[in-house]
Length: 341
Image (cartoon, rainbow, N blue to C red; front, side, top):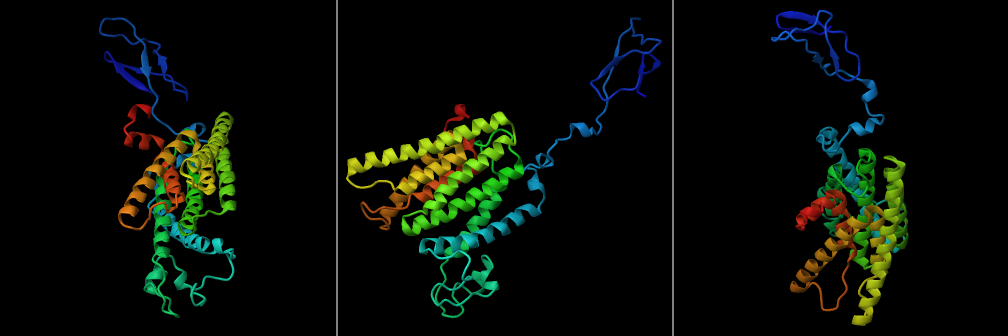
């Protein structure tokens, strides 16, 4: 029962329902200082309404709030490091057409099977001090660096704000999609660095996975959103592939030698399936910038000779991951286009 004192009188208002604010007057009226009767507006206080709770409990969690608990970043780092350890296996065995599962992890030089503690991400390399315990040959520093990189990217994905998956994607689904994209691009970038070549099946399945994640994230918001996202990402994948192949053909005719590999064009199609048209353009622009700067520095340091090809796949992967993690508005503002955000 709500009580309000006006002009020296106590007035009892009728009980307030679960609706909007009610306007009531007492049976004996509420006189003001001028003797006129005026209505009293009584606003109900906040209370728990189950019908106002989100239907999807996952929507209550936001990665920015504070990462849904202090243990989540640690868990993401540990899982990311473990995935990074497997990515090292993929990058080594897949180009050699070896099984990814058998035989178990072993020294690539002497073939000795690794102990359980040697398989621990990062820690295993530190425990053996960067050398095989059996043949004493050095173990590349790249192994723990890849594991640390993957761990860091998995933690960064907790705060990812891609603008290519609609305005209100489910946070958990978005996080899983980000982890999948990072874990898919990283081994292809490593293989391209080593071989100037990327596995065709990974490129094709990457496009399929990108469109599948787009459909899941889009239709989980609304059927109209799902159809629009799927169409735009299909368009981006197809247009990106055709544009890169056309650019490669024109450059080859002008320079007399291949300028881009078909793997790069297919990787652009993969990014289009994940990012959509606008973010794909920004990712390719960022990749070109990174490639130009990296190529110039490599030439100055003598690491790259004139007309020597270099891997462009890692630049594209970096551009794609950067657009996923930070979102298109961030990169537009950084490039000086605040009006376009």
